[in-house]
Image 1 (cartoon, rainbow, N blue to C red):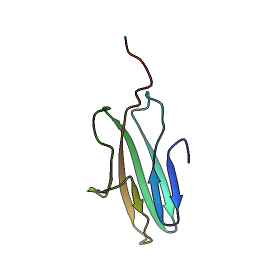
Image 2: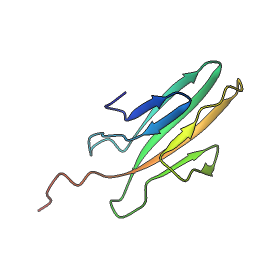
Image 3: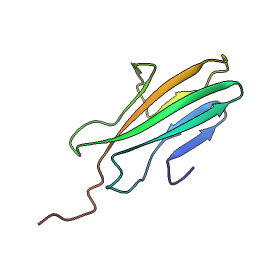
Image 4: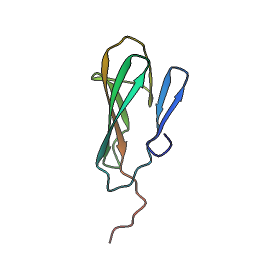
Length: 88
């Protein structure tokens, strides 16, 4: 969970991915009771804002409220590219 940046507290799922710069994206499937969340994490340029969307609706914070509705939901997490490497 820590490497992928998923942290669950009750019915809240927080996102704080810390993945290598080389990873352009990754997908995870997260089950909450009978509900499945298809999570896609994509890296965006450093100057852009991190966003979290659920079924196309942008959330105000970097977290979502997990609901038990037996459906499947699509989550997109756009994170900034790490700036740890120096470029010549």
